[in-house]
Length: 342
Image (cartoon, rainbow, N blue to C red; front, side, top):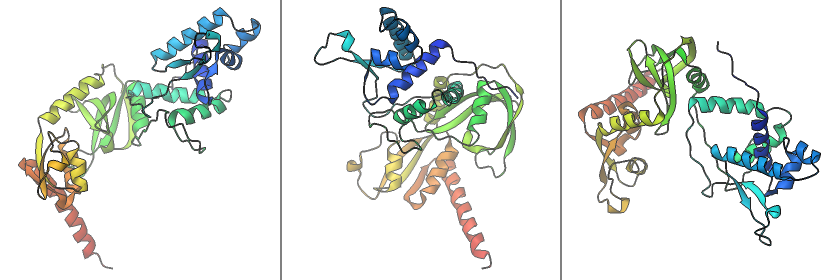
């Protein structure tokens, strides 16, 4: 087992974390004096030097710059009665006015966030961090409600996510059971974990498959059971942008034409991602033809089959047959249940 990485926070990072927590837990912008009096790392100097000094102001500005580099902006709120008086300025964390922030996390990012979370559980900062978390992430178990402008995150991960995240971050060779598209039984896989990423709302593991001698993308939803550590590797991982471009190109090469019953749930869902789809108001008749392009035709076949009689596959023949096989399996399952004695 590779030990968990938990390096101690540097004095600088500890001070910046406490500054961020203090600003997030406050219901109003804070003056520099209020910050210096209440945040460890500033308070000791503030008390020793008998108040606010130019050196403290410079230290605060360096911390603002460091946080800005991570995407966290501490903005200045001027006093409307004295807009040019720096002594009256107050500070707060800038919130996304649209009410949400969108960003991607690599496996390394997720691992570091996990480690940071453990640091925030330290009794010295736990209470303030809990309040800050409510404001930053939205409603918490405590029942607190964040302001409407606070950025929110929605994370949904499969059960194996944590183990795969660690495997990628720590360059492990791993083994797991994987169910291929349309397969009835899982297969054992032996891979070098390279990258975790989200594509069109689904988590994928990019890994080098030793049994096939090539890199592959694995849907986390199809990985079963425990993740077994087999060793380590030194392969370099491609970027999310490179992997996304490859899947985009694959999707473009696999057009599927369907007819969808107008004004239904399937119409609303599929029309939103169809290529050059007509506006709902332009559609005439009971059916509308749409062209879909998907990187995983198995997932698309599952979705079309789940739509039942509301969708008909026009082409290609392979997709029509894939949907028919799924519907046939559903029929067989129901017939088996009818045959069971009651």
